[in-house]
Image (tube, rainbow, N blue to C red; front, side, top):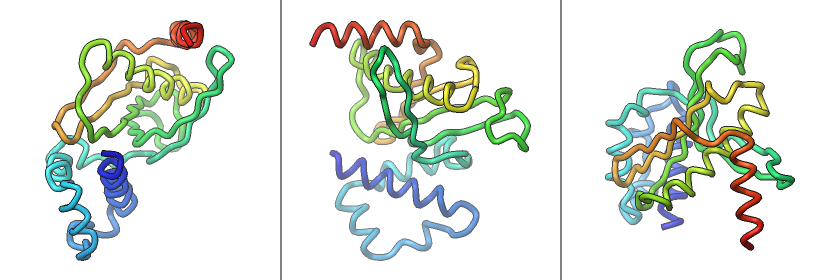
Length: 174
């Protein structure tokens, strides 16, 4: 499963990095096609190509983030960050809307499991806000389950104080 996810992420990075310069679909060589077939990437690539994401260009890909919550330094990489609106002359315009996306190739979690996993997005969102001075309310976050063609957005992610409580509680249970 990890290899499949890594291969899909690499395909997306190549696709995003080549936007407007090269048609990735026509540039695939035999080795790429073999890997895609062996890891069953075809259906995920097909879903992506027909999704709303295919026509959008992320402002950032694999963006590193870091922030401290409850005395713990948390680091991660946001798979894709999309920007809409705002002043195009300002790279981190606080008036722009931002959407953080984490591509997932595995199963879609449900209930409490999904709620717990969404804390990853809450950390990313808080880190992006702090790093670039963007109000939290202007930052959305989603998991996109490409193997299942589903998106899960979280309009009510915890803010700084609630996220700190979650982390403090988790550390207390250790």
